[in-house]
Image 1 (cartoon, rainbow, N blue to C red):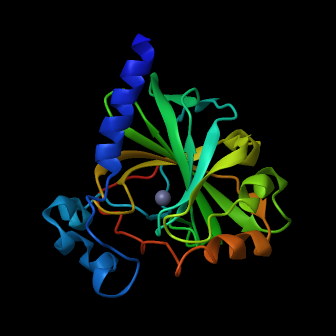
Image 2: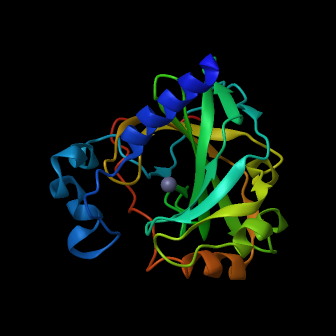
Length: 243
Ligand SMILES: [Zn+2]
């Protein structure tokens, strides 16, 4: 009982961190990324110096401890919020990093990828958004390479919400574990949310190995949105990227 109360508080605080404060924003034009910081005082971080996404390069060798994944089938709802298609998770899936547990809240996608790896853009990138009890965020990013159909998310893709505001329960609980690569080595840097309010202090964990997706699957995702949903690459500034 106590645990569920703690978790619901966590969801509220994370929702506050993740909220775009109802200020209208887009990926291009007058409400595009160049203007996000000016759209609302809440978006002040959008013009700060530790923003995401970045081009991951100039790596520093580090003894990065493996991420401990405790994922189970828990993706229960798929929705189109006009900026992305997102799968919300029930409680019970998490990662452990820095001796801290971060609960998996939701998984969403960007086409093309937001982060680049050594200058390379990918057709699709998944963001697995986690929060610890204090509301600190950790995002695991997975890159998709255009190849064969990815059977693991074929079911969820069948229920793709085609219009902004559409939301439905998934017929079968989604298990993100099945769309992760076998090798889970990763790059790490400190960054931000890639959408307003662009809050910083986010632990970014980008898996090195990409996974396959078909052209049709990328097209089905892109067709649910009005255009590309990737923020342009941000300056790395004084940050280091660990590998
Ligand atoms: Zn994202």
